[in-house]
Amino acid sequence: KAGVTQTPRYLIKTRGQQVTLSCSPISGHRSVSWYQQTPGQGLQFLFEYFSETQRNKGNFPGRFSGRQFSNSRSEMNVSTLELGDSALYLCASSEGSSYNEQFFGPGTRLTVL
Amino acid sequence: QKEVEQDPGPLSVPEGAIVSLNCTYSNSAFQYFMWYRQYSRKGPELLMYTYSSGNKEDGRFTAQVDKSSKYISLFIRDSQPSDSATYLCAMTTQGAQKLVFGQGTRLTINP
Image 1 (cartoon, one colour):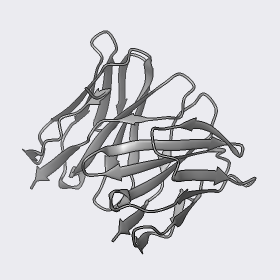
Image 2 (cartoon, helix red, strand yellow; image 1 turned 90 degrees about the vertical axis):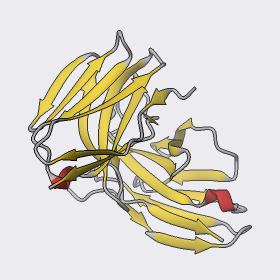
Image 3 (tube, chains in turn brown, orange; image 1 turned 135 degrees about the horizontal axis):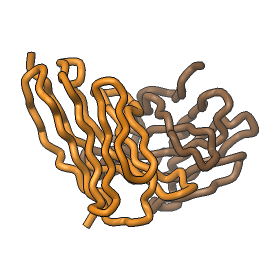
């Protein structure tokens, strides 16, 4: 099976812009979770989608949003970018049942100037 | 205080040594425990997955969970230079997909 794929791999934006990141989960996986990784805060949970519905949400401002499509692919959007949003954004997929193994993609490295 | 505490290291050991990595946690509701390995500029790779207390072995890797002490460990036997990476512990509650991660321990195995 192909792994989790994320596009784009690298992105440079300026403050105030918005950005959309994409994630394709492992075939058959219905849950997609998003995480932000920074040197200072480590890996932090953003949100999780299952069957096109947001099922869990972390402690991030409303500028961070996401959605999931009927084919389980997911996108996350960050509006009004701030310098502190520079991070590695990771997507993880799982089957979505009570079995919780999550498999991560390579991430999208976002730099905000 | 963070829910999951992990010594960030760095930890440097000679090739062939036994490596011990640890995490402590405060939330007694955590029931699923994982160890991920992350190479530089890559996404985390799932190494071990354990439910509740006990030991699990996979090749050179052994994961231990002691829920009474809220303490988990990962042991690497016969360590290799290719094991050099950051090791992250993660945990979650029953039925949840939200993983709570430790800070990660940067490990270097010296030839």
